[in-house]
Image 1: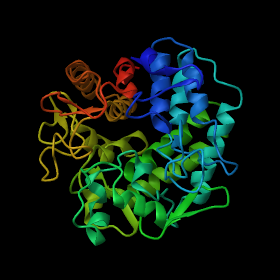
Image 2: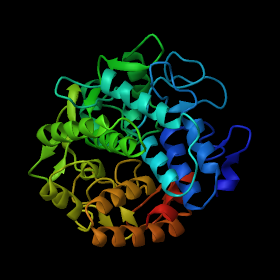
Image 3: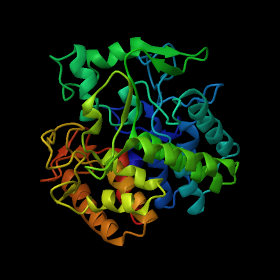
Image 4: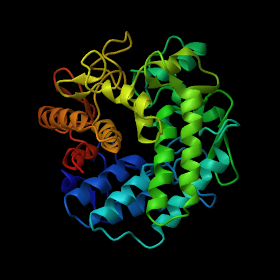
Length: 372
């Protein structure tokens, strides 16, 4: 599958040749992990190209266009929005699997994290995003309160590039390099994005970066636990900063990922236990993105309840941190079933394994990396 999507001229895989012809940041980070798990040195090129159009201020675009400019901000060749910073983990994975990192790669990652810490933090210390695209989970029900404000006729499960998505591009504010740094309508500190940013800081320190990143990660973990923990649900929620409302607490897998970073073993255990619970996230074919006992759960709808291999991978990563072999075993087994049943689909129904979106999609090859 990776061979079929590899572009030797550009030095990376397309997620899907016809449906997704551009390069996406976290897609390529995950695909680099897949290459490394298979012992293929193209992992280095995959990761290096994902960071190759980094802006002078350290910002890493979430898309590098393969064709004509599309409306993702003022820049002509790349997006002005980012995605979760899984690049540091990808680099650590490559290094741990015998792949030599390209020269200067860790410096690029450090500058990317500096951008988030300097330009995307609120007064309480959390990292925020300025468009749903930046979360990776662009149609998550956690954004419904923003949608309900003025766009009630729309549904997030309509075609992804909705009028509302493009409206929010117009509400973004950009720095002089073209990076989105604020929004007049949508700013939120997501649990998952903060967990992945803090985890990236820890991984960077482990790669030989500035050890002060460990202290920054610990401070971010404390802010996350203080402001985002939802004791009633046993999960972390999101914090709306501009716009938004109660939908930020909808139980999704995003609320489990801070187990990657928290120093609180009891909270981590409560969240991770829900990955084994069929009433919450456990399903025959991987993990449902939205808790199965919640009214928002729609098992065939894009980011409304379908399962995703990259989310299964991140959940396993969190479980591994806490030695939860029970969680790892169950998620690995159900993910393998899902990869086969769905045809390595972009996402799928967690009840039946029926594939949705692009089939196949390169990040579903992460099934080969689930066990380390």
